[in-house]
Image 1: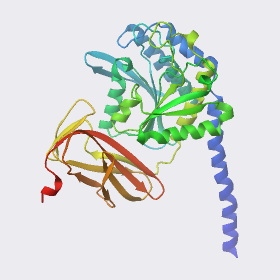
Image 2 (image 1 turned 90 degrees about the vertical axis):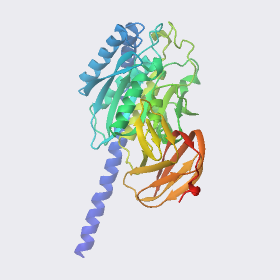
Image 3 (image 1 turned 180 degrees about the horizontal axis):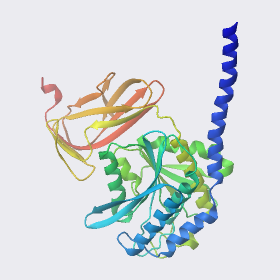
Image 4 (image 1 turned 120 degrees about the vertical axis):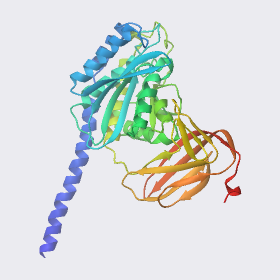
Length: 404
């Protein structure tokens, strides 16, 4: 009889407690959405615009960087510069960190440089305004995973700043769950344009769009945006993360901005009601991912990005994300997360080539191949699955089955 009483007591406490946690999580999302303020977004964007055109390397760009750095610091976040140099051009990223409870990291990013003729109110003052708004609101909350708010320079010259950041993270083994990139998110002229947002991602990153869509539907009355999905468009800094094997999503306004890269990209041509909607959606999506359980995540151990292989061995590193293989391709997967792994599938140009059910999760691609090909790994758990993909420049003339 005493056992039954104890069980009854435990049940009576457990279920309300679970409901309380769920309520707290939902309340946090609502509070974050409600914290977005159009006037503050206007202040950020106008301040950035008023520096004038600010291409990477200019004094004006340094002044914009200082403004962003000071704002991040004022919110109590650990803020630092990450300096980079590429092809004779120098710049710096600004990184503000909101530490979580574990070593998983979510990136929320935009670029602060403009082209030489434009004050960049939409491209990408709009994205930076959302970045600062998110940092200001979220700094007083706690999350399971660490969030890094990152403002890149060098985007207009070729995504140089984000390339440096992503490469550095990859080489240091940083576990980045996702990057959410906002680039040109403040232009809307029609009723339709003001009610839609484009989300661009590669195959491995579609789950980010799924989460954003769930947020948009659940909080439709507070956000008011429909999501239009696109295949990956590599024209912004999210691409640097994809190239280093991370998962990333690109938020972009629905209507094309006719003032893009022109002197007319000014505050007068930014729709702040629309920008606030995008900001609400992005912040709510970011917060949801930052508290998301990591059930299963798969990454390539071999081949490495930015390396040349010969005869199955890495012979040198190169200063890019490209992978070059002479001979057969040895692939090995690293699985992260709490789910038990049922199997790991290995694909070559979309064709299933092998299945491994126990560690080490490795496979040798022996098919003769030349030039650019795609290899993919899919880790299947009890309930979830995850994939990772890498493009490889391969030169292999000896098929596997010829060898003992």
